Amino acid sequence: MAKINILQWLYKHSPANFYSVTDDGCTIIKSINNTFSGYKYNKIFVEEDLNNLRKIIKNFKRFSTISVLMAYFILIYGVVFPNYQILNNLYIKIGLIIFAILLPFLIMAIISKIFEIYLIKSFGNFEKTHFPCKNLIENQSYKEFKFELLKIFILLLTIGGIYLWIGSPYKTSLNLINNGKYNDAIKMTTLWSKIIPIDPHWYSLRGYARFYNGDYDGAIEDYDKAYELRNDEYKSMNFDNKIYIKYFQKKYKSALADFDNLIKNSENEEKDSLLWDKAQFLYHIGKYNDAIKIYNDLIIKSKTDKIYLIENRLYYERAQVYASIGKEKEASADLKTAEELNLEIEYQNSIPEPTILLEEI
Image (tube, rainbow, N blue to C red; front, side, top):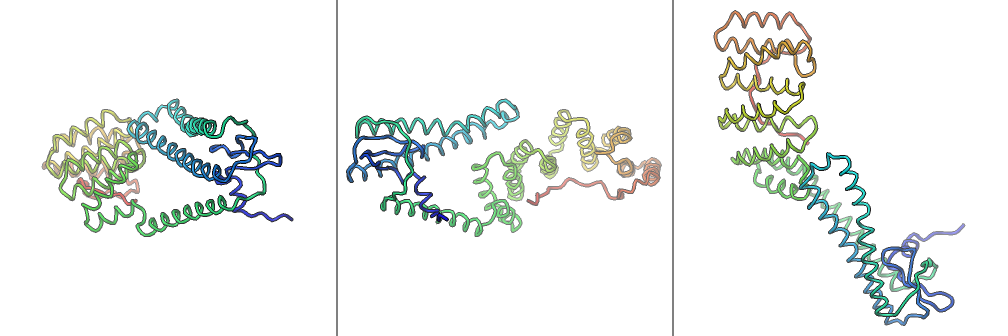
């Protein structure tokens, strides 16, 4: 049974194995971007030419790799991230995926053509052919190949070690906040918001740190950004946090305008939940009559909306509002109705006051 040397097999299919000599005295130079094709010359290259080729091919490969990485960097940070809304369009999304797949092949084809021009100028015309994967191993190239593998291995170990040492950037940012190191948390989340600008976590965490650092406008801006980017169960938390900041600053009119704008652009069920939040907010800023009007509508809607509205809880909260304006009769009636509904849901808590929440990642 034949034994396989993995390193040698990898070498034969790697760019380091850049030339082959045929039995009839020809030299085949491997294509820099296609390990199965090559350029055939009807002569044996001298050592000086091979050494020059080794250096040139290494530079071409590096240039090819850097070009592909830079192209993806520009595509992601120059096109996708600044215009992430376009990904909502299915055809644009499919087009971008196809373009991203074809992009490296296009770049490599251009660089390969430049390499072919170099070969013609340096060694004359060639014949395109299949590059033979023979058992011959050229010592110097094999040593360089193993050295390159060692560098990659060390790099991966270093990255892994740094990650284990520093930890997840999410957890690190969260720990900085929990320890009251808000400036450091802002620096960390700002850095990662530059690296992955469509991840809402950075803005949520930075918004929290900015608030406790006294930068209220910056915190509101971050929570708006996080709300815009999120599409999960934590989405509303970012809006609620923004409302809290305005409540904390006593910017009640601005907070109510935010409620009205979001309610106007929401679906029916989500609108009910936002109206409930607005009613609670109105209660805490002393606009009791406005709160009662919303509770009246929500209690009617709760007959059909069993997902976002809890009927006995609505009665219990309206009772608190009635009690605040001295309408004890109406408050008692609502409390009685809440008890009679008996929906087996805990409801006897005060109307929750706006608060700022930190997402546990």
